[in-house]
Length: 244
Image (tube, rainbow, N blue to C red; front, top):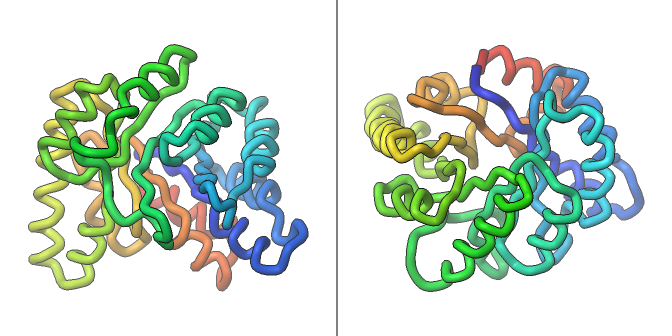
């Protein structure tokens, strides 16, 4: 079964739009876990526009007694503040993602080159204290091979291009999927586990769940958006059923 890690950032976005503690991020985590979600993801950004360091600590404290059944995944760019926070709370997994100033959401995966010089040291630092490291990468051979060379445990394939191709029709979806399958097979051959995330939903997962060696998907926006109409617990169960 492909594991589902529910990203609860959007709950914090809604809370922060008004201030205070409603809706509660930790209540959302409780609902997801009660519905059977085996993973929770947060992405604390430097501007604190959704998940805050206090949220990270609260979620970590609540999940600690539920490990390893429920895994905590912290996403973020490898800035010092984020790395220090990850070291403090010790999640099961840290997913390192590139961040562009002013972006609304992640818009690309890592590629080897300028701006990646610190990544190897950060990967080694986190793995040395027992944290599994995944690198959010473009679905091409060079980024996958590069992630393996840095000592990462996993890659998370950036799936927005697949989601856009899926919207264009079956032929485009299958062509895009073939590229992802090739990258997943390469990752597996290099000893990397395969995660995936960004714009996956109940529709395009009908195809994407067939990806060879797929271990985990991280989904937030689509889950919270549908939950507005049918409820968070129901939506989490729908995704779990689809991925089983």
